[in-house]
Length: 67
Image 1 (cartoon, rainbow, N blue to C red):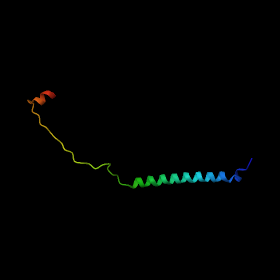
Image 2: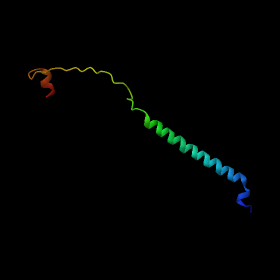
Image 3: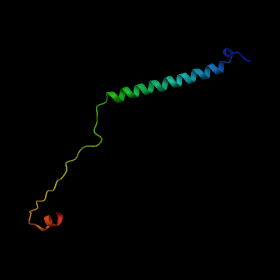
Image 4: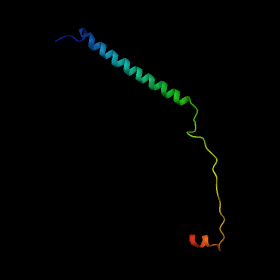
């Protein structure tokens, strides 16, 4: 069997995997820090609403059908 130190391509693959993991963790940290510094933004602007109110007397037909 070959000695592990003479298998240079195994060490190269391990180094590439380590560098990819390091880049992924670094990118996640940078993304988290940038997201944390932003001011909270409303998802959509609020528009004024129209409200209609109808008065009903106790002797009206609408009141008697509701109750």
